[in-house]
Every structure is written in C-alpha cells, then in structure tokens.
Length: 221
Image 1 (cartoon, rainbow, N blue to C red):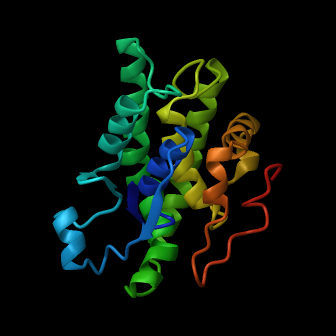
Image 2 (cartoon, rainbow, N blue to C red):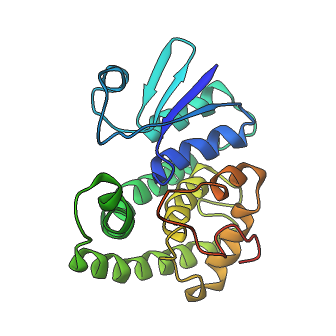
C-alpha cells in the first residue's frame, strides 16, 4: 500500500502526485495540516514538511528524493533520461523550480494569498505579492526560451522537469496568478501536460474558501 501525506496546493506534493499517477500507482492521499504537526506526523518526518510518502513500512520525505526513488523503483514509463548529461539537465530544472521559482514566485504569491489565511497567519504582504507578480514574468519568459529550442523543458522527451514546473504553475493557476497570454509556447506546453490523465486529480482539488477559476479545470483554457 502506498500512502501520501500531502497538502492539495503544495507544489512539492503535486510533483509527487503527478509522478505516482504517471506511473499508474494507486495511492491513498492523506491531507496533512503540516503547520500544526501531530506527534505521529513528526515521527514520519521530523522536519515537519510535506510530502511524506509511505510504502509498506518505509517512509520517505523530500519531493525530489521521493520522485527519484519512485523512478528507480518503478522505471516505466521513464521520467529520467539514461544519459548522464540529460539527467543533469532534468535535475537542474527541478532545482530551478523547487528553489529559485519557489523562492521568488510561489512563496510570494501562493503562500501570501492562500497559505497565510489557511494557517491563520494574517493578511498577505503586498510587497511580497508585487514582487512575485513581477518575477513570474521572467520565469515564463525563460520557459518560453527553453521550449523554443526543445519539445519539452529538458529535451525532446517529457521528464520529471516538466512535472516539477507544472506542479508549481498549477498551484498558481488555481488562484489565477499565471498570465498564459504572455507566451503561447508555454501555454501550449502546459495544455499538453494538463491534458494527461495523471493531471486529472489535481484539477479536481478544492481548497475551502478558495474556489478555483473557471479555466482551471478547462483543458482548452
């Protein structure tokens, strides 16, 4: 049995959910209020963060490590290339989104607009929101530049890099913070990812008090 402790709008959890779904692995989702960690949850991950994956009696944490464990344990379909240089590019882009994009955009928009309210931490910081809204333009332009040279983000095959980027963008799209008109190339790429069966559970997510926009679950925007 596979169980994932997650929060619906966490891009790190969404990244793991997409990987599991793409591998067609059945998983039990357990929503975790990680900002109010229970003793049981802290035993699973002393860092007090989601996602946490449990497979039988083994527990795994940290989204990139979890995804690569899944890839090595369930190699089909392949989400990491065999060539070392190509694998490096996938990992570089995963780190780009989980580190740089998260720091400059996700934490400034999603966390300010949604997580603060859910966690009871007050109102959004307008300076952070303004900074995130400015920086996302740079990142979309970078995605467009990559996709002008490649079929997918890290090369000519879909990889974990695409799911990592889509996990962050889908979380922001839930609150209408992605300007899809900025790049037709990026919009077309996201439409391809969004149309995959593995993406459907994400499009069905609902966070109380934050209904998604009409286009969120529309495969044609």
